[in-house]
Amino acid sequence: MTEYVVDISISVSELVNELEGLRSSVDIIRICHLESTGPDANILHLARKDKHARDVLVALAKLGFYAYTAKQGVTSFVFDGHISNLWHSIKNGSYSVDENGLVYSLARPKIEVSSPKLLVIFSSIGPDITNPGLIRYFTQNYQSVQKFVPATTAILRIADIGGVQGGFYLNTSFRPNNADHIASLIAKICLEHGIEKTSVVLYGASKGATGALYHGLMGKYRTVAVDPILSDEYYETHFDDSHFTRGGIFPQSKQDVFAQLIDRYLIEAEEFPESAHLSVITSSRSPQYEYVEKLLGDPLLHHVALFNTLNPRIDDHPDVSPNSLDLAVTLMNTFFYDLGLSPGIREVSFD
Image (tube, rainbow, N blue to C red; front, side, top):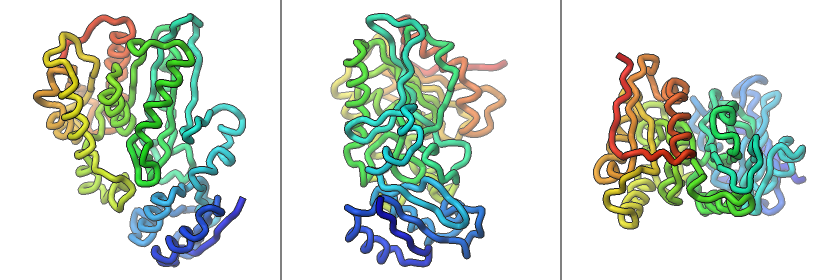
């Protein structure tokens, strides 16, 4: 294992030039920022207020280096290809890694059968966006979900490694084939375990919903997406790009990715299907609603069951998922039991 240690004051161009010359041999980078942050903060904290620190984070992510720990004023980064040698949950067998470097876990069904069902869970951004650990790429959403779906259901969770806060299960500049690799992993798990495509449901909330909806559209899977982030605009404008979507980490904006994908989907799809395989839960009380409504309106609305929940406990985007779990589980089981779901908009009232 080769380390490269440098102070945060280094220019971004010098850092990139050094690393491009050493890329094949450097596994760990340690960025010293004690004078800027004190001993208890990390570079993700600093990047919230310091443009240079942000630029360093973005440059490292584009080169495939991701923060994994911070101690005493030093944030350490691991190279993408070295993650499996460092992440304890991989080394102890809790997580697996496929041939493309995707990290995942697979929980077997409670009742083993020859043709099981599969719930694929895509992770949201964690509650602490300044967490320097790799677990920020693998938030364990809805850990009790296996109790509420058929006992013959396996649970596949896929980590979202890439970028600073995750790759949204899309392509990144460092992982240009990330989306295809995710699709291949899902197909591989199905093949190995005798799972029919109609027995697969994709689920995610927020960032995870972005991934679930993308792969549901691309792979024609049954999908439950809860308030997906379908545009970079809101977080770039209102939260100073807290998702780090500027700067070249992503080859395309989400707006462009989904616009192109939906156009392709509509060309291949049946014109007026009786049953929708895509379901989306959102809320007009969430700032993401306008983006969801715009992108998933006509003519895609003939293919999507869109639920607008008016739960009074929802005041913002992060409130949608925890206040719609009952509806999400209902939709999962509607798909698992093949009950049929007609497309269109439904308002979930709490009057």
